[in-house]
Image (tube, rainbow, N blue to C red; front, side):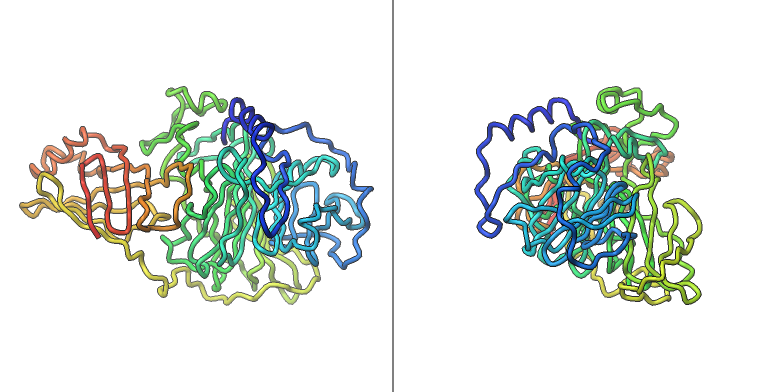
Length: 501
């Protein structure tokens, strides 16, 4: 959802004039490529495919799942075997071809994930290689090792070392056009795409997203379901919509990326105030500057629990785009029905699953049939803070987690009166690396303090300390505030409050 105009021009200038980053000692190459630059027209032919050698390894006739070794977009199937990548047209019969790779990639690739017009490949050390123009003819394809700030021109990145599963995701103006927020408003994707690697880490309890426009680190996170008390065993993401499953076969989906989270205030307006019924933005420009249109509703969309599959499934799950808009997604889960192997499928918002027999052997790990979405063995965040304001009232924040929002801000006045405010936090836009989680390094959030509606509606009858605190926030239901957190302090600027762990 980033703006194309000036930024993509700047990206092109950076690529043309900046010295190349030093080649990695292990990969031995730097590949510029075109990813992140303005899109070319799509060539609907297969020009270039005929120059590729035929595959000499056994590969399936078709690919039904977007996994880390086999994947697809609406035009092509991709697979990796023995360190190499293979491709075939998705819509027509034909033989697999071996995709020629730069020398530094050949024999090293252990993962591949396609979405929209980009493909992410991972080498045996977890390093990222991005292929561009993957909806065009193969002769237009090219690879890049660039990743990270500024504007996708950084020196590269790699998977977190403890990654259990990962997926490449692209939300684009040409394929998706719009996405829908929690107020029901459709927002234009904008002039550029939102591309992320989503990585399931920490034994399935954390999801890190790695944006090529952001610093080369692993600091940004999306929460897991059930406020982080869910332990996923598999993840798949397409068009910024993630699908996860746990060992009990509970399936959840969520629409979320850096821009949707509320962090991209450079280009977009966000609001916690109700945006329902306001006119929708017609284009990217009005989304940014026209205050008469609906802002992007916050908080960002949360996890949605999907209906249980009425049969046996495995941990081999997949999500892919089926058309325009963020609701156009199909979910799949490998499984069995009446003794037949295949997969269960449903559209994102459909109520029921349908079984598609394939007759192929199951390759995933079977999941138990007893629903158990909350894993009690996952500890709550150890970061709790307490302190006093300059005017004498005390406050606490309990079990703060960078990925889970909102958080109660519990206030207690000297006379014993209590007030629970709501503290919303969005991981702020950064251009320098940040350590994961909470640490000694200060971590900045875009915060918003919310006064509960029931307090404002009865303000005249509330105790004096409550009315005075509300007055310091100008009586507004929502007050934006910087929030800075370390492993010892929690600072909220709007109320001049510093809490200590």
